[in-house]
Image (cartoon, one colour):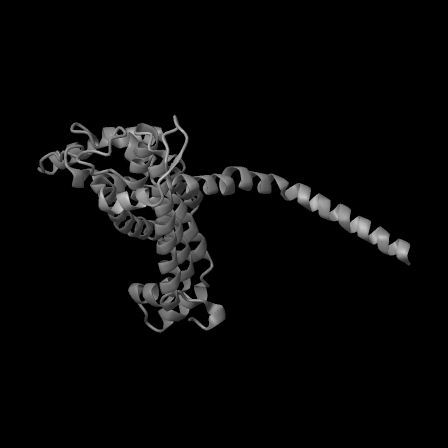
Length: 306
């Protein structure tokens, strides 16, 4: 009996070792490329460090400097919040609009979905950002269209507000991933509900606000959280369009771009690390607010619609 127990224990041990072997790549990768770098970054955020000399402990000076002695930091925070609060709702609205159009029966619907998803595949690339610069240049397509309608050309690279609008437009254009998630959610809404509503005389808008929106609210929450986090981390478009300067007049100086400039142009690694942790805290607060407020507008069937 004791022999059997020992044999089962050995088999269980081998089984556990097999499981550990399968998860070890993730564990090692998480430790080496996520957890340990985060701990080092947290330490560096309390130091003065420029890559060429050992870190010097300065306590909370980096954090104090951000909010009391760095107007550019506060401006980058303002620009980023505008980018997030304007760009994310517009992107999700457009994605839902296209998803509802594609939620129809058609032989070409697969090709249409692929076409609409392409901007999200290539949208964050350097090539697309360069293309966007050309589209919005003084002699680009956009100003050409404005001239056709009798409107004067807009100095997209000379006006900070226009430059930010250009960045937001690019983010809205990259709606493909959100659109596919919305489309999957729309497919899960029973068609019988719309048929019953039609029998009761409900129109399009009544169906949309009484059926589509409540049953799609959990999908909206998911997209809202993911796109908010993604918007805070936007870097490549702002860097390419402004040539790494955040211009004009810091109009495209997003948080991530200013962090990059502090770290790799000014060699303020300690300050950049502090900025990264403030961004993590800010994203965490925003996500927490979204989840906290979701209790009043997200429909969960298992909870009786609350």
